[in-house]
Length: 196
Image 1 (spheres, one colour):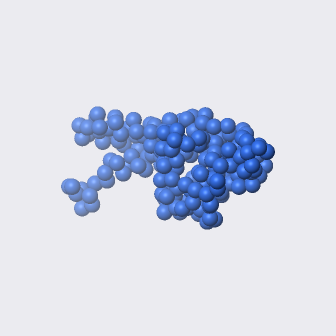
Image 2 (spheres, rainbow, N blue to C red):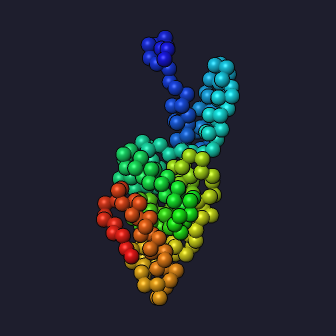
Image 3 (tube, rainbow, N blue to C red):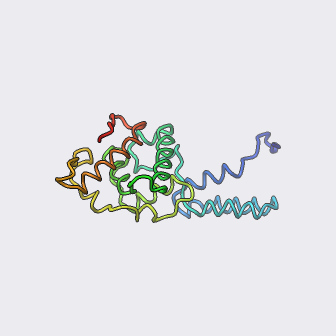
């Protein structure tokens, strides 16, 4: 790699893109967009610049070094944040493959009850999850599950009934939440047991 007049290696365009993706609003991303456009023009890489900008316009991508305040403080630690992002991506694969009856509403309930997130709205939860999964479209999280039913329960998911003849819907939701909590177990402070 060639060096600049200062003797320092040039900043890679992917690095600039990564910083831009961590910005929350279009206004905050605008200077980076202009920089990448100008780089494309000056380097005769207009097509490459357009591809990078397409990725950038897909939305904010969470930076593990600067997690939003929606997360409890211990999950804003870069190591824990990176672990959490990887867990969310694994959960997305499971939900997308439909190998389990999980929904994002179950995930939100677990993240709230296990102290990962404060109490975000469903729309904010959608934004947070989509920013952790590259290429995930907005509203796909918000429209996946019965948020009203799960979030209106007064008790945390571990206290829901596990007896299906008392309340089959709630017992099934508890079982699903338990499976999801097991995925989060590596970043949680309390032990999660598999329930049958």
